[in-house]
Image 1 (cartoon, rainbow, N blue to C red):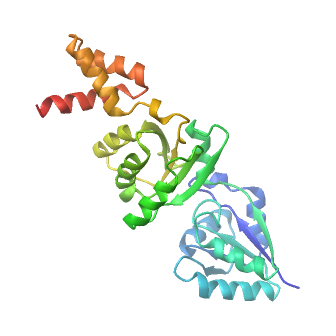
Image 2: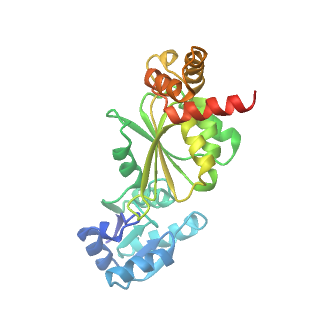
Length: 279
């Protein structure tokens, strides 16, 4: 009789988020398939557990996946874990699940932490529906194809992004989607956890001034029913410039334009100051 594959969600930063059921599962399986065995060893040490570990990650998933499946078919029980969060979500664990499902192996999810769901709950942009898009391709053509397919998507969209690619991604999204609202969460459940709510233009200004650090989850608002009615940063600056022409101060003009367009006053003010410096 074959064994079982358990998909065990692990903490995304705070070790206190490990569930009793997850701990019990890790304690009772025959072996653990881990994205990075060093990371999993730290978790097992925290729990006071010792278990045989096998490496299963992006570059060995085919060879290792077949070996893991063979052991399960022989009757062993395996827990699949990723470095943080729920396995098989935007990671090679999906392939192992497919292998097991095709071979009639029982797969059981042990639910728990998930960065995408945590960030969604913090965003204020869901409106009841969302779509998970994972990581964008590093290839420019494929990245723009992916974003272009989502241009008219009305659901909130969730992306994962690394710090060194964040600014490029924000620029590309601004180009394709226009200046929409975005919620950016980083270091979820950790000491420096932070969720920032911007428009794309504001986010670019922010991260040009502060180097991105940590792993990011981006939640983008969906397309509006009447996108022509939406205001962008250029519209807001134009409105503010009209107030300035009427002898209003730059600060007050930015505030007034912000109230009318929904664009953050700091972004409008910074754009106005930058425009004045180039004249």
